[in-house]
Image (cartoon, rainbow, N blue to C red; front, side):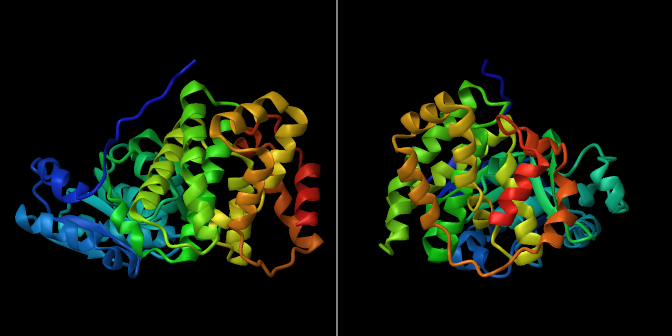
Length: 364
C-alpha cells in the first residue's frame, strides 16, 4: 500500500526564493502578509530575499513579527485580522516551525476574521487564504504538512491538521540555516528524528512513509554527530539536515505523529522544554516499546537507516541538554486523562495504556 497526497510545490536549494517565487506571485495582487518571529527571518537573510522579490513584483508587504516559540492562537487571530483589514490575498510564513505553523492558522483568520476559538477548532471554515512557507530551520517539516500547532487560551498546545492547510508552495534555501545556534540545531534535529521514528512506528505507515522516514534518519546521522561534537557544519551538512526535515514532514503527512509528540506537548506547556527536546525525551522509550512488541519492524528501520539501534539511541541522547525539572505525582495524575484513548498516542504501533504512560512520567 502506498497512499499519499502531496499538493505542495517544493523548491529547495540555493536561491530558491529568488529563482522560483516571482513566477508564483504573478497570480497575486497583494498586499502580502509576512509572518515572522522576532529575529530569525532577518538574521538568516530570508526576510530580505522575500522583500526583494515582492518589491520587484510591485507587491506591498505587511509584516507581522509577533510570533514567538509555541505560538498563541490569540496572536494568529490578531495577525489574521490585520491581513484581512489590509486586503491581503497571500500569507507567507518565514522562519522555523512556529512562524510556519502560525501562518496556516493566520490564513484561516484572514479569511474569517470573526471566527471564535471554538469555531476555529471545530473547523467551521472552508477556504483559508493561500500560504507560502520559507523555512529557516531544519526540523519541523511544516513546509510540506497540513499541521498547525498553536497554543489555545487555556495554555494547551493543539495540533490542527486539515488538507486545506497545505501550503501552496515552500522554499528551502539551506543557507538560511547557517546562522542557527547549536542549541536550535540540536533541538530541531531531535524533532526530525521524532517525526521519522513516530511515522515509521505508526499504525498508518506505508511503503512511502517508511522510505521517507528511514532516508530522513540516514541523512541526518553524520551532520548531527558533528553538531553534538561541537564541530562547525558546512553548507553540505546543513543541506542534508534540511532534506531530512522535509522527508520527515512528508512521512508524517501520511501517518501523523505518535506518542512522543503528544505527550511531549505537556513538557513544553508546563516546563518550557523546547519542542524537539520534549519529543526526544520519550524516543528511547518508544524504541524499547517497539523492540519488545515489534522486533521485526524495529530491525527494518535501523537496517534501512544504516544505523544500529544503540547508536541511534546514543545520537538521540546527544541532542538532549541538561533538563532540570520535577514532575509531581499530583501533576501526573491530573494530566493523564488527556491521553486516555488519545488518537495520536494510540496511532503508535501497539498503543499505550494510561498505566504505561504513568510509569514513564514517574521515571522521567
